[in-house]
Length: 376
Image (spheres, rainbow, N blue to C red):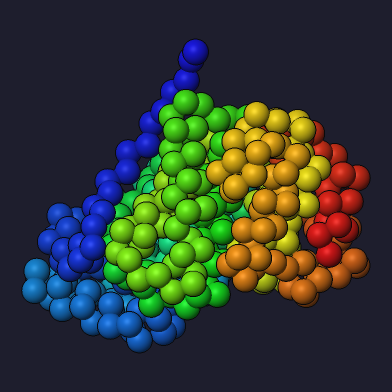
């Protein structure tokens, strides 16, 4: 057995830990760019709490509240310009995975010149990034636990990850109390994204003992607790479990990567700006049906955690789970049409080659096109 595992993530986990943000930020400088979306952090009161904590530590701040779902390279570049112009020495992200990914890209581009797409496609290598403090408010992407930032180029529709060790957060403050205002439909979507991260890392050809151990724990926690929370459970330990599972998902894909479900979903949401978790819900059972006998032991273990017994049941177990959290859907229900499939197929091989290669089943263009058709 041979493997390497290196992931320098500084996690501060616990209910109420968001109140410590001022003390944590004081380690990284005196002026912060706060990256958030247009409303949720303001509406929940989190932004006011953070501003008060920063001011108590003498930290000045500038608000950049333009992060959007499926964040774009253009918005990230705008944020980086603001951070540089105002001399910010740290970035603070308050929000879900899209906000954190946007903040990562801002932190990176504030220290690396040129077009961010050159770094996304590895034509250039970054050398540094501003320190990032991540405060996730949704339990989905796990972006607080890795060095990925998924960005969409609005000119081409390409949705692809910026990957760099420099954008691993300097500290991630993970407080499950911040998750409890998530509407059930959003919780289902982000929670399924988290589940897919752990499932795909477990199935990946780059999986190894450390990621397997974490991924199985993530799957176990989500399959047990996510339906409970969706149906109104308010137990703090369940919120902790789902929040921790989300972070686990981000950590394992940093090392093992994702596979075909994420690889095929990115073209769909890059093209039509659909909700990522809903795209995964439409695609993952179909891909599982086609793939399960290529890695029967792993799929059987996932099936067992979902309440089944064998690999061939895994797709149906996923459908049952999705029905339980109100997330059964198709690509056509998300606005994708048959006319979109040729573009998505080609784009999949452009932006998701690594994810395709990681998958247990070898997939060519004909197979990917057929899977898109079945998911309509």
